[in-house]
Length: 458
Image 1 (cartoon, helix red, strand yellow):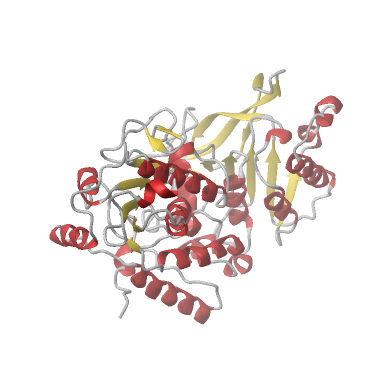
Image 2 (image 1 turned 180 degrees about the vertical axis):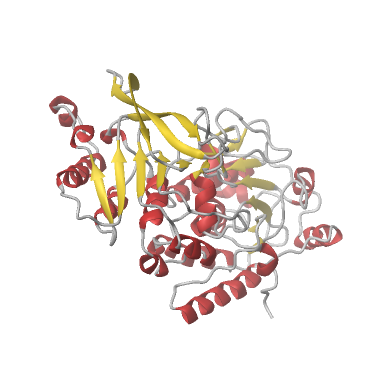
């Protein structure tokens, strides 16, 4: 491959120009892979519609899981490289159209993640007080799209539907004390609202058994360490027959069962809040109080068939909740001018190559669906870049006619786009860290776009 690439049209004077659309983990890992390879000189422009980079690391990772966010130190090294530019506050499809991108870049890599969510498909899903966990996470993490939302937490009971780590995250945030949350980088408006929260009971609901839950043990174990919340588990809902348990080979599942059985065997300490971890139950209807607000959640008891699928038993109960958060999966959103598989919520591709679009690639959740953790995306992005380089070697890429940074700058300036650079982001980052230090917190996030844009490199 090296020989073929060395004879390609790309050189230090005319490097391979690549646009990465999306600056979350997959996007930065793709840029990193392009920098690390030595076959062909490359320049990378990383675009994001927000002024801030890092995607779900900033806006999706739980604010009390700060160690996970340390991955941004590596991201900063990548985006600070002189061969990379970060162009924030640039909307793909309007500020930079697909046609314009093809004219200015030899290759495009779409890494926009999965910003929407899947629905339950049950009556009452659109009542006031029913929303996606995605929206709730964006609100407490200070995402500009959600920061202005008036989240009045008057509900005494909350149902969180789903048994992945996001479901555990939102449940944990709902029952933590202000003192516990003060040590996180949760947005100030959310900290204030949670300080006045009426929530006392949170039900985390899984339609299948405890052995099929998707959360990780570390996140589950945290529920036994909360200052003012007891974990509540029904012993009969975490029972697994001997044959099925003997067949479990996944260590995470084994450890999860150990933790859940420990919770089930505990006597509640009488703390003011409770987390109820329920299994083998499915939501069937969100009840209306007569004024368009959530007044309860009807659930059906399930059993598992031989294939491990949940089957309703016809036994129902109603949970006294006034808020319902669905956490049953993220879903990708189509980009203008880019193929999209509506059913799967991904860009149709073969090993990262966008179907029918030579020179266009994808990585991360928009490539494979919402699975894995932050680190999973490094290999995924690296694999995509390897295919891109293979296509360069095979002469399958058509060099762009206006492949230079100055042409991109002129295009965006002509449209009046207020581009936010990585140096601008570093100024905002320093401001947030300094403001947080003043408050005795790790960070004080700026959450509104117009305020972000006032913090610039001087």
